[in-house]
Image (cartoon, rainbow, N blue to C red; front, side, top):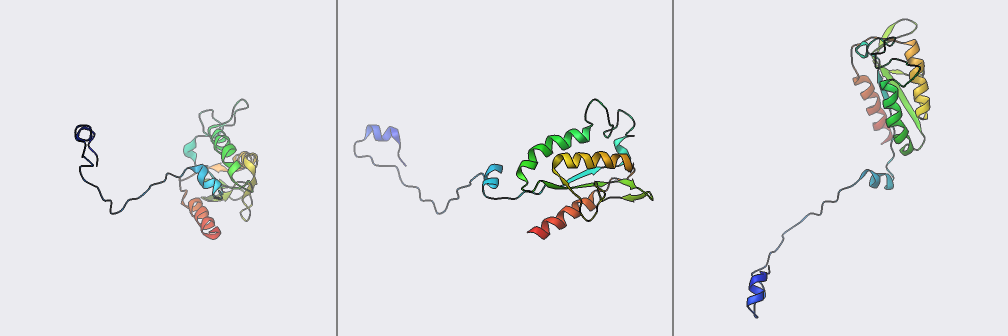
Length: 164
């Protein structure tokens, strides 16, 4: 450790002592881009809340309202996130799920259903495919409840565990 005041006044001054580090750690902040450059694969999954708490889709106050002039809240969120994230998903095939709705033809309540109507293959091609499946589902299901999205979280967790 060098004291600049002492060094300037005394010609024979070398230092005021030494510091010995017994250990140290260099902490590197890794960015999202570092993960992508390193080969991280992203698999994007969409889950949409079809519970009645979103409001009657026929009313402009509903988050699911289909205006002829603008996207509803769900469609805006899907486009905003999906158009960016799809560039980081190699196959651009996205499982799109819904929860909290009564499904045709029998009105059974489901907390995990494929928006495209195919439970064995819920994948949609790109965000445009997800949007189309969302619009079709909205026309055929009845918003219901309760809000229970643990089945879709478990669906994604099972998939993540199966791919590594």
